View 1 (cartoon, rainbow over the protein chains, first blue to last red):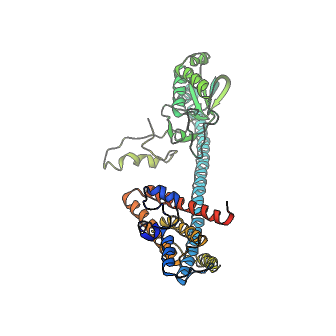
View 2 (spheres, each protein chain N blue to C red; view 1 turned 90 degrees about the vertical axis):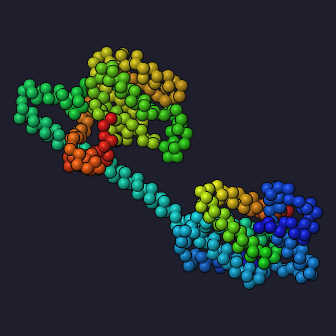
View 3 (cartoon, each protein chain N blue to C red; view 1 turned 135 degrees about the vertical axis):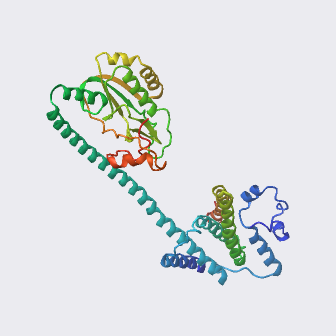
Length: 310
Length: 110
C-alpha cells in the first residue's frame, strides 16, 4: 500500500513529504494512496494525457463489477445470517416456555395424585396414626399447611436490573445469598414452614444462583421475592432482630432495593414436590452407579440427579 | 458514468447469482468489504483530484483486499484475530474518512 512513499516522484509533489516521521500522522494527513500521485507524476513526465470523464479501462471495469458483486454478496450474507440467529434465539425461548409449562402441568398432576393417595391412606389408616402422619408431612414440607406467620418481601432496586443485556448489575439486586440468609434466619426464629414465591422449602431445598437467575430447587424465581413463613406468634419480633433483617435493612437504605417484613394471617403454603429418594447401590461400574436408580423412579423435576441435595 | 453502471451491474449480478460464501471465507467478507470501500473512495478522490489511474486503482483494490484478508488470517492463526481485524478496520476507516472528507471538499467546497 505505502511501499512507494520513498520513491522520488511521490516526494516532489508536495515538498513536505521528504520523510514520513510517523505512520499514523502520515495516514491522517494524506489518506490517499501515494500510488496515484506517483502515477500522475509519471504521466506528466512522459506527457501521456490523463483519461477524461469517468471512463476507465477494461480491467478497471472488471474490478468495479467485482466490487459491486462483493458488496451484494456481503449484503446477502449479512441479511441471510440475521434471521438464523433470531430464529435460534426465539426457538430456545419457546422451548424453555414449553418445558416450563410441561413441568407445571406435571407437578399439578402430581399434586392431585398425592392428594388422592392421602385420602386413600387416611381412610385405610384412620385415627391417630393418620393424624401423626399428617403432622410429619406438614413439618417436612410434604403437605399443604395453613396458618399465621410473617411475609418478608424483597425486591430489586430501580435501575439496577437490565436482564436483557446484563449490564449494570449493581448491588441494587437481590442475590441468592440474601434469600438464603433470610430463610435461615426465619428457620432460626421458629418458622415451621417456608415458601419462596410459592415454592415450599424442605430440608433438602437449595437456593442457588445460575448466572443472573436465582434457582429455588432448580426452578427459577424472579423478583419481587416473597418469603412466606408460618410459625409461632413471636416469630416476627424474633426475626426483626436477626442478622439478616438488620443487614437487609441497611442494604435497602444504602442501595435502594426494597425490604419489608409484615405479619400475615391465614397463609397457605403449598406442598413441596415429592423428594426424590436415592438409594445406595453396590458399585458395579463407577460411571453407571449414580443415576441408575433415579431414572427408574421417574418423578424427576430436576435434570441432574447427582446435584440434587446439598 | 460507465464506472457507476459497472458497479450497478456488479450489484445486480451478485443479487441475481446469489452465490453461497464458503464457511472458511466468511470471516474475511466484512474485512474485504471495508478494504474494497477504501479502494473505491480512494479512486473517487483521485478522480476528483484529476490524478486517477486505473492500473493503480486495480492494484490498490486487489492488494488491499488480499493484505486485509492475510492479516486477519494470520491473526486467526496466532489467536489475536479480533484485535488484528480491529486494527485493519481502524487503519482503513481512517483512510476512508480522510478520502470522504477530501471528496466532500471537492464537491461542496466546504
